[in-house]
Image (cartoon, rainbow, N blue to C red; front, side, top):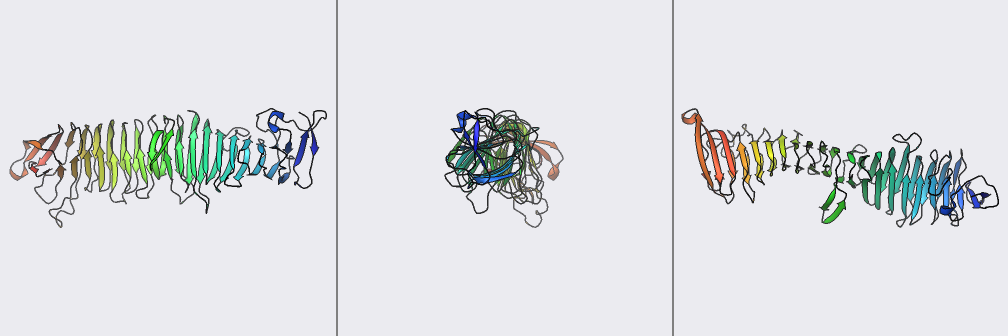
Length: 475
């Protein structure tokens, strides 16, 4: 398609072209897309202006075929689009664009771009190609939807994106490494930002600056990190169908790997296993759920939950400055559960493994399934003298509806002194047998076995004195 120039003086320094088949012009345009009119910026200069509503497409660079992204172009373009504008920006061009279109479209070939929705009804679909060289940062975009419209960005590997979300926005990584930072603009509504992956070859790096983000990596991998200093992650990472706050959300199954650093929110790793997830130091701000074998979940504050799901992995609560009120849940695989400060709750499921309580005691172990676990509960030996008669050890509870678990407690202290443990039977009864294995008199050491009425077996090893049932407790 040939074109002749038409430059309205009132529209800045943008160059307008009217397609003309009979005249050889200086720009090649895809006539199928452009609907009869084009505006193209000059190279190597600053171009600015308003797009005439009669011109449907603006190009910062040059386009050689229908549907292609603009190539070349050294210009710096600042413009306000019309209600029907489609934007093309070249590999080396810099574009700042205000979208006024309810059905806007932009094709970015690389280089830096800024796109902002002007109105709450404005929406735009953006396609980002990798820039020259294709490396990380070869294509960059700030997409500002803080006023509450909508934006969908499909990004090739190497893209860096900052999304200021106030409406309904989506970032889709399409292969390679795509870095996204979700930002809540000052004084704006916090919209729903979704970050997803289109293929298994996609690595999503997602940081937050106070904006809630839904991350659905599908077959890709996810690395969730803290954005600007002082802002915790506020994110929801999952795959499949989940219910959050009464809202049912559905995404592709998550089969990749996950890394979460100092996260706040809900994070469910992929089924590939080998994921590492840690929480922030904000109390009660995070839930971690393992999705595959070998996952490591580490809690950093009170009131948080870690769940191994069905995988073989490690749960840990390691923030020694925090006291209590965490929940660590084992799954149906073999697992290790450990923490180093007092007041933890362990939910033992249908798997097998080892649960290690805080050395300060006051731990609670809840038997929820038919698993096979070895447990060390630990005790607070420092309080026994001054607060005699109080439980300074750990509490064990049978809460399974099916029964059939086999639990071995290696450090249970019967209620014979100042510090002791308890096992809560609930409505169940117990048949207890004790075997002397060493010592004599008050120093006699026993192995005890309690078979509960629901089929669960509890082994109390190396106790000083025997255990016995007292009301609904074994003490």
